Amino acid sequence: MAHLIHPSPNYTIAIFREVIGSSPINYIHQLRIMEACSLLINSDMTVAEISNHLGYYDTSYFFRIFKKYTSMSPTEFMARGYNINVSQLFL
Image 1: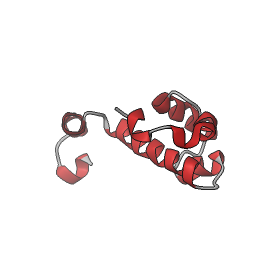
Image 2: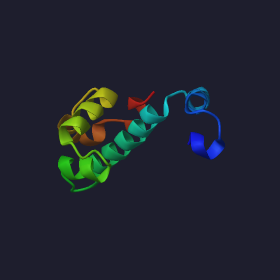
Image 3: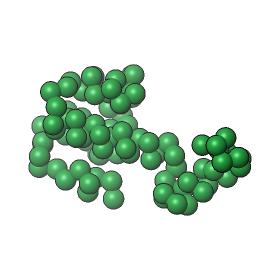
Image 4: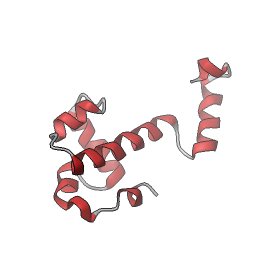
């Protein structure tokens, strides 16, 4: 991003954090986990397939990131299904 707008990478991250309220990497993880939640509920994909689809090529890393953002594992999330309001997970 910094290359596109020409200031330093640190300045770009600071501006991103000020506008979005999160670092770029945290924002990307949040978007990926929101998509993972949707896929876990609305598709027949396995957790490993979803992990790979979203760019987490190490499934154990995907599990750790998923749990960090949702306070539950992908398997727990699937078991609870529609009883979870995904938008409430990221407030």
